[in-house]
Length: 470
Image (cartoon, rainbow, N blue to C red; front, side, top):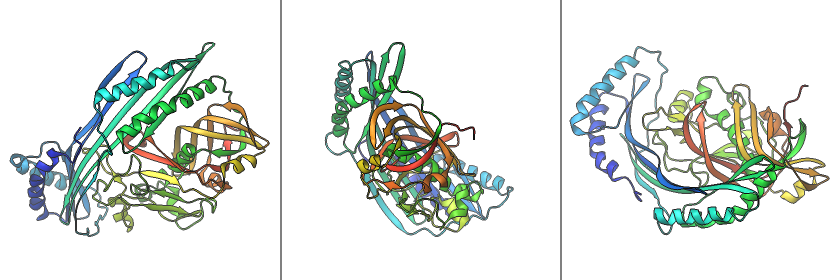
């Protein structure tokens, strides 16, 4: 573990500063991002245990803007001896890009800011031996659970260091995030089902101590799924648990308000700014500073400080989220959502922590209000068409509600589909509960993966489940 800002990046800052000075004489804007990240993993199951690295990312990307066109050059070899070669490569790239169609990119003047940010582990740093021992203790508890034939646990520590230099900015950030994941496999009469759970916190110790408390719930739901039936297709009153509320936020108004899609006229959300898109009970936010979760950073890969963006305010779509390029082309202020999968990948507008705000209703009253429907929970997957605002969201489990009471019957999987505005305008109750789920990653299309979180309260809505012929 590094436990603090990267010594490697610190040693490279003088070289970055020299390159910045050399390029500023020729180009309207120059920004240099240095990245040094790593993730370590400990894993235990019934038969094995191992320790390894999940991923690492270390390198630099230099962005220049010249005559309305931006160019980027990435390298993992930034030394004084190579500066002439790097500058030559950038000049060649800019020359080649000048033959393309100009988009008229003009970045807004950056505010002057020099700051170092840090978020470290709270409490004791655990050794790999301590983590493995804790995971074994958790996995062994599953052996006492009926019908559980296999189980596993994984503990991940992610550390991110980044530095951003430009004419007016000198920014450093380091953040630490531990998380853990457990799963159990239930089997009975030739059928098997798996269920998982996750824990995250700013403290390694708290994450590890919380895992054993999740064992009984994880095993119980896996057993429930063994007897789950397929739901009958139809339109139902449902209550979405926080994980499903978050999935809807992510798919419906996450990708749909990424403003690089506005630039390309690929998102219907562009036409609905300051118009109603949801029930007046619905407010939604996104931003690395909107809450604390796995996508909480201090500045984005454009050097824009993290923000808390109000996307929907009482049913009205107020604004989208953007990286600096999209904001410059649209004449808006960037929202700190410029993110790269890795230093040698392009910046895109990406979601961070995306969630619906809590309301004032009580879950028990929401359940009582349903004559027949489901309480649906546990994110499986989702997809969206931002151009036409159609979504499909899949939940792992649905709990039947009849005459205002949970019957104990479960169905799986629950597949919701439909038009985004119809779904969100049907929301008739929003609970005062609130939870963020930090276990996910999101791709842009089929690639460009970044860590994200989503969540919210329980919400009552009317949705289409399954596929209807009508």
